[in-house]
Length: 424
Ligand SMILES: *[C@@H]1O[C@H](CO)[C@@H](O)[C@H](O)[C@H]1NC(C)=O
Ligand SMILES: *[C@@H]1O[C@H](CO)[C@@H](O)[C@H](O)[C@H]1NC(C)=O
Ligand SMILES: *[C@@H]1O[C@H](CO)[C@@H](O)[C@H](O)[C@H]1NC(C)=O
Image (tube, rainbow, N blue to C red; front, side):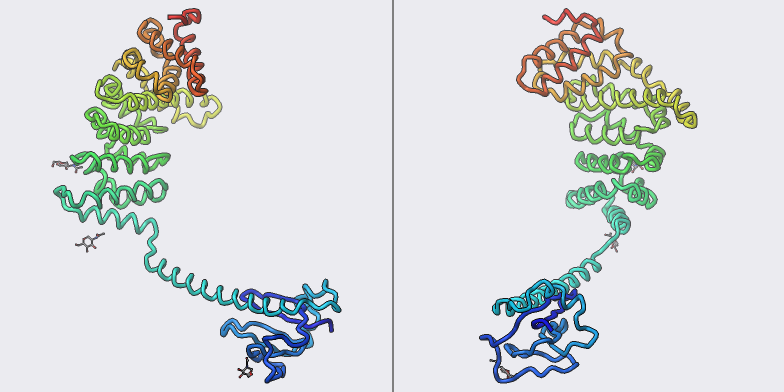
């Protein structure tokens, strides 16, 4: 038998291997020798124990216990794990022993404590736990409970509910559950259609954008509830940048990859609403840049579907819907080309300080260039604006502006086809 063997059991069996516990230590209790049997017995504080015992920490009591090794326990991997490597004649330093015992005890106590806490926390969690679905139903119910006449005192709770919904309804299943439980009719429609509070309308449209984004089933339901024309109505009448931004986001989320909705909404009030935003002197440049981005995204989407359809003959019905979609002619009819031209010609001085907006316009001009090239290439105001911004950015130290200036160079070359005319 090599040295003295200790095996301490912590929550997960913790093998401490062979330890020398020879001799007496300061902590030893000389009044009683430990007499080991085949049963576990508590080792008293500081009590000496003979060599070769099986020692453990009792997890229920936190006390040290020892017993004789069973025959079949001798020399098992567990007991000899660390001991094998140690030289049996070289005792481990004595002060190592209490350290290890104390460490094990400490760990056990810590574990106990954390289990207890975990248990408590878990019980608490279970008590308050709601699945997303339960939460959504509760939020809808809460909304139904609000008084029909708008009350200032309820505003904060309403906004909070909407914020929670915006967060929850990004998930496809949650969005559908919200719709199935009447959320569109009972929560969103009344606000979007009738509420006079702008903050509430903004929040409701954010929820709408969240639940329709990349969610074809939700897009269909939202479309069926006629949100498209309600949003177009808001876009037509609002000059609040936050509201326009939220409405554009929801509008875009509803229309993207949904050719039927594009057909119905853009052929009626939709296109007009977008172009009116470009024309209105009260609408910020930032909002106008979001409008041209949405327009060019939709133009691009149709182009992309038609180009890739050659490789996907099974998408025939989708392609047919896009073929019927006459967004570009509607844009022309409602004055898109002149509206964009005017924004840039009038506001280029403001744009000098807003390169990210210039970039959005440059991208949109590039994508929609085909449908407007006849008018844009003849517009001295537009040319002047684009070249001024380009020249200013070309002389900048800022990398981003330099990049935008290169994009503008390409655009000008394409539109005006007179690369020599760069001087003003
Ligand atoms: C020594 O052990 C006895 C019984 O085992 C106990 O009553 C006593 O308190 C112990 N003394 C010390 C100093 O731990
Ligand atoms: C709605 O009101 C009813 C009746 O006042 C109440 O029992 C219920 O708990 C309320 N629901 C919510 C979600 O506030
Ligand atoms: C908006 O208000 C009108 C007039 O009070 C009402 O008839 C209509 O049902 C309301 N619409 C919604 C969606 O709440």
